[in-house]
Amino acid sequence: MKNVIVLTGAGISAESGLQTFRDSDGLWEQHRVEDVATYEAWKRNPDLVRNFYNERRRQLFSAQPNEGHKQLVRLEDGFNVQIITQNIDDLHERADSRKVLHLHGELKKLCSETDPFYVVTLDDWEQTTEMKDKTGYPLRPFIVWFGEAVPMIEPAIELCRKADILIVIGTSLNVYPAAGLLSYCSAKCKKYLVDTKETALGIPNGFRFFQAVATKGVKQVVDEILAEG
Image (cartoon, rainbow, N blue to C red):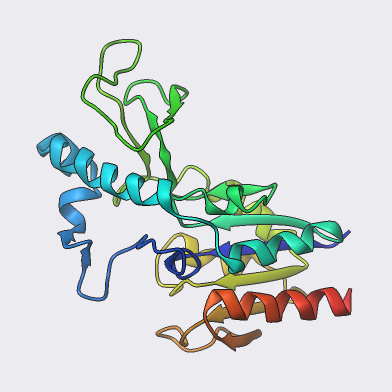
């Protein structure tokens, strides 16, 4: 069974109404990234950071997977499909994708600062100051902030090395280390890119480019892969 690796970015979640990364002006929902998406910001102003992610989480609880997420599930009957997502939402899981690796964390989870294995999943959108770990420290969002290591990058690299087919959806490919994953795919790997525009460096070498929103472009790619078998 062929291995299909799917790398997704903000573009696939945008059509579900989620803004999952900073805008072109450097702001994320009118906040500087440095003020809401760094460990230093968390230590400096935890209330601001907590409220920021509460709002992101509140939006996520009301959002639904779109056709882009759903089309990927069609591949699972005939291929070994692994999603690698830069997004912190759970829309792939709610669309019924079985294998999802989150590079940058998960919005619906909180974790301990002192125990990397202490992770809790929220049943509602609000994180309160009363939510603490076993030692009494406040829980932080389970997010890989700017300047922090990306723990899941090594597993993602190993997956890309085994890819027979790579589908990249809705990402600018200028955020590292995620953008570097493309270099680990073999020359024989068949590669697709779905986005509304070319990346800043153009279309990566060896990629077929589908210029479309995810809800339309992903179906085109999936249809082609299924037809070729």
